[in-house]
Length: 308
Image (cartoon, rainbow, N blue to C red):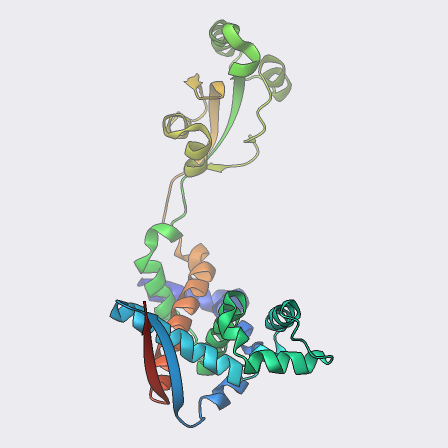
């Protein structure tokens, strides 16, 4: 069965969770005024001054133009006036300059007229983000099964189910045992040979506390390697099931482990569909914004000002 067919089957089996994931960005963006921004797009062409550094590459110029358009749209749509973060930045800036009016609304309007949203980096970034989300909302484009399947295929390692292992252990802490560690390890090895099926209480009495893993939970090999180091993590992951292995050394001390359960790494498109739907929605959203910005350029007379 093709990957896209697997995705479609998953969409049919669990429509609510996957649709919610796929529409997260669109629904979220609608809260930020996509309809209102769509109306601003129809305004007549106007001059737009774009400041770029001397020697800027074509890509950097394009990025500066897109940001300037998004900022202009956000201000014209009223986001600078309505957004509490931007309002707060304007009021703070004018209060510091002792240029605030008695009426906060008049102060905000004055700040916008002075161009403060474009000058304040926090307000500017906020408005650009709001306009980007609103543009994405106005497109109303959603990922389909082919988009999600493409995301799964293009980033297969990210969606694969990692190998996992569940194990119990007798741990001897190097810090607690000091010079006696090696002798204690030899004694523990002999005790486990004579007592191959100890109880949890017996393991706890013989060993030292180990809070980072539990015999009741599986651990990914990647987490074990990050926690214990590549060699130690791999030794535990590759230990035979059902028998005690060790001594296995780490920076923490000495480990004797018995693997209770193991699952190999495997592709898992069914489990990965909700996550892939979110990523595919992000890609669709980004492409939609790029197309919208390309269309919007024709509505502006761009004036590039290069500064040293």
